[in-house]
Length: 190
Image (cartoon, rainbow, N blue to C red; front, side, top):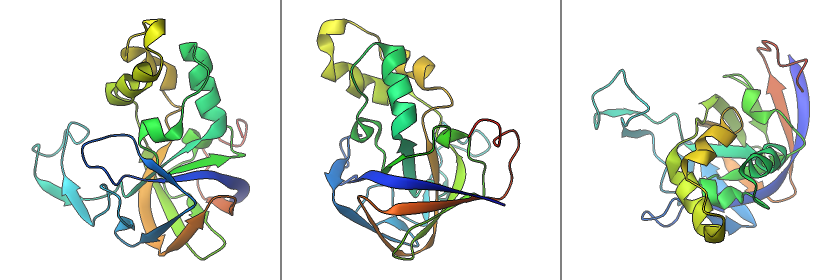
């Protein structure tokens, strides 16, 4: 097992069901169903286009209770898109961490442990889609870029999704201990 350290740069809650964009906070509370008050919280969810193995709309376990991105990877996406920044809120993230440049490469089963006892577990990479691209281009309409540019620019940089293993709170500025249990080719890139 390898231990890495990061810091919570920002936290967000999805309190508007009509928008992908999340609202910044100073802290978020998480319980075993996800981020309290977030539209993606719940023990179950409906299968969608990401779940080819299930009929669309059928109830499945919610392995997307939280989403996180890294400040370093967002800077790379912005550079690839030719824009000044990519705000984590535009991507619908709950957390933005700094200190792990190849954050999206963390394997399934890695855990993020926060100072107040909260433990999150990685389920998988959050693959890019065009919807955050639409939000991003709305911030830079004068550039005339396509929303699909986000998909290309953010492949393997879009962050992670997962489940909550232990309830608690997460605050801006918290130190995060990341435990990586399975390290296929990650040790060379971190």
